[in-house]
Length: 293
Length: 334
Image (cartoon, rainbow over all chains, first blue to last red; front, side, top):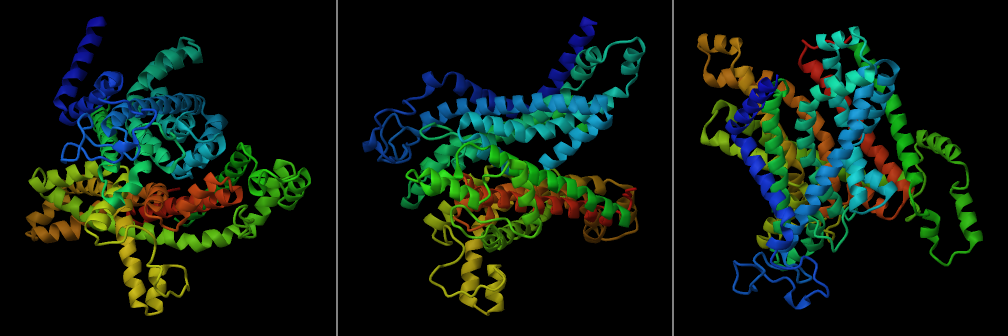
């Protein structure tokens, strides 16, 4: 049994290694995780120096003669180092992505398993509620929730978690419905296993693949949405080095030619989202060929 | 088919009611007191109570909901707390701008996306294919607001080709008729205004249309590849039909079924994106209105905007569903 499991894992790793886009996505994400963990060692400057060095305001980076050493990507209007802020920002974005998807997964599993496993009126009521949540364009739902619980990064995480929970619930429900009909679950019922035991020992572990695949893709969406809320001023608040908030603060200075302050945080968002999209697509191909488009 | 349409229409009613209930109750759970915000710090308790009574804010919540729902059904969404304008008036004056932006973005997305997808599929594994798929992958990973800022910077600030924001050059005379500014300038024969309105439309439409464009390109490609592998295409080729005819007359038509669905589903993304695009380009639409009213805790306006967005979204999804059954008669719903 142990041997069999080992070969299965080997098989998955082998398939992963042959999937170029998945490997590339993983490298991008590991790079960001590395930046996030060692931010304080890597970042050349303090991301939010106090008092601000206003004499360094909007200095260009390495491509220009006017750059100041130690500030390779230039500075923003407060004279802060953009590179350092982006590096520290990776902590925020990865955390938001992780926690928001965690909330969505938890809610989604609860709703999806209850609906799929028990069926009947429970299924009906829960699915009608997700129908209603699906009637909101995704970001709008997050904005509505933020309007209620208030602005700020922690609130944005909750809002985005709730925003993605109906999707996760649908995924879980579909998966549970499929597993419920399999013979080994019937066998479990026949030998008198309790519902709790069946759910935790058999249904949940077997629904793991779609949760991992959609969780990865949702994390890309969650990071985008968190940046969007930050950009709208409804998420992370200045002086936080959150990428969306950084963009929002510096976008007015492009008119005077300071393009770098608004450009680089966006590239950081693209790297994170691209990495997760590639990884998610790759995982889908590897873990669950049924889900392939 | 007729019954399916009726069934789908009936299904919308509880969803919309649910939306109104959620919008209404969520907003009323919000912290902060709109009356105090409106009257300022120095208002007396009596003034506050009077204003509450005037807007019906002193009633129990469920009473407020049903009174409000009745009003909504009569097309009365109340007045904005901040501007004192009718919410319907405020939304109606901005709604055409959002629709024009969304339509322009969709035209861009469909034209470029479908063509790129077809090229990609017919020349699979070529340089063109890899470039299209590469650009599409970047397209779906790009934040709308960042792309907007970049376009604005390159084409507005550095090259100076296009305006960096707004809906029209404010110095131009303009007659409002329908509220759709492209339509209005055509009706009134106002050439200068039409050029200005279209120039203001280009960058926001490209920014907003890029994600759907990328998704449409990917879907078109995979759908085309699947169709091109099928027997009837081989038969067409065997019959000696030109490759052009095979692809454009037979393959494309069949490949469009999933593309139509994707276009419909992407309308939701488009509405979310409109909120961001309108903020970047100072576009006077409903998307910016909803953000501004959330800031201002202008509840009636927030609710109005949410209702409009959800209604449009649900209706577009319904149309997508129906179109899908129409295009592909193999699909039956009973």
